Length: 121
Image (cartoon, rainbow, N blue to C red):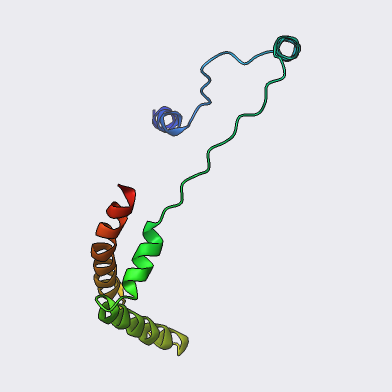
């Protein structure tokens, strides 16, 4: 009874290979490839669209360096150097810089949002 319970649990968590259609036979693939070559005229390759570049990281970086966000950035960088120094000295840092990071990130996001939406219009 215990072994059937365990086998039921294992079978419930195993992932079976799922196929939408039956796998094609090798001969069918070769026939289809020949037909495609015969039917398809030479088409010029379509131009691929370039992926748009995300400008938000650049705007946030500029804002983090701005006078408005400079104090938050300064506090974050001080915290990082303090914690890194303790780690390199082999001490256990009793703090992390999450709060300072979120303050800096919030300021830079608030600064960058109007600039971003002005460029997207």
